[in-house]
Image (cartoon, rainbow, N blue to C red; front, top):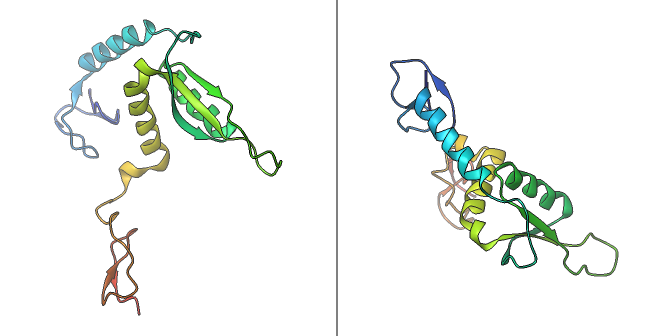
Length: 154
């Protein structure tokens, strides 16, 4: 069997390129060796955060959102800490919390979070060629950013 290194889809022999990602497929042996190598690298990473560690803030948001992002990072063996931030003090909303990680883990964490964002929003399965389009009500013809349909705004 052959596998897509990007999305993980499985293909029968004879197919060389992933139909979704347009990347060359890898053999099952190569996928297994990559998985073992990744496990070795992640197993050596400590999940402990000590007071001496240089921490950086990577996200700010509600407790629910920060817990979800911490779970995503923990699945990739990247330790994260949720730190409190001052609330408005009026009791109308919850506090904004900070998600902190070790400075040495920043690059890997940002890759993991970007991949999770794409997966959770299904951005990889949409045509984004019109994402930069802006609705201009004064133009003779404008483009819908969602679908690319051209129409007159009047």
